[in-house]
Length: 80
Length: 242
Image (cartoon, rainbow over the protein chains, first blue to last red):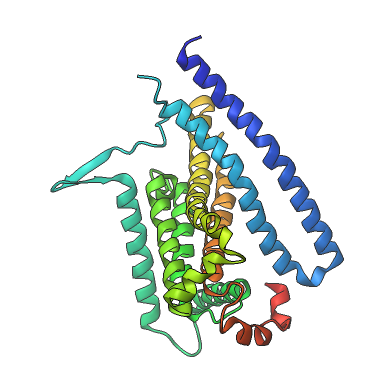
């Protein structure tokens, strides 16, 4: 396999594997947020704001994988 | 095929300075926002018309969010946070205009915005606590946390920048790929999703800027945080519907 083929495979692998963890994590976070809103509908503003910030934090790991995949595809230092 | 997201090609040069498309887009958005604000605040009336009512609604909502997150008076932070929010919002949404690439889809714009927040957090921390008081917050809860706290400052600014860049750029990128593979009208659902992502990311960018500055201003042990907090922590009826 050439460096280009390995790069394409590894980019796909990075995004695919990197989407699993944040997917599970965001699902758990949203489930917990919905439960909290169901228990205390009055504090929906504070809960949803905290939820959005937390989701952004969790999502960052997936975005890192995406950036690494794009670096491998478009700014690969081993491909001349 | 699709253009790589990390490279920008200069359009023209002013002397030795190359000017790229994101720079022009950024200045256009800045000019638009400034012009709108100047025209709006020129004829303020006590009984607001439609446009002024919308502007007051936006300003009040931003104030409310800042006050909720920071638990202090929003006045010193309103200009910075509000401008960042409106700029990122308009920049993200500008991607749906034909022939317009959102400047936030290039990492330079996001890095600049994240660095502004980084410097603002240091500035407000020093202004509120004094230099020694601000430096002392790095040694909390114990002195062994100093390297970790310093490291956190760098990584959180980096992730603040990468988060916005990754979200907006991936939206643009996916639309480009769908357009080149499937053709006209197919990427329209993706563009609708992109509008939602743009609004949410602008909100998150502003809220995280609030959180970072708020952490520098009144973390644990702040001198006037203890005196201010009880009066503002009372649950107000207006907060529940925000």
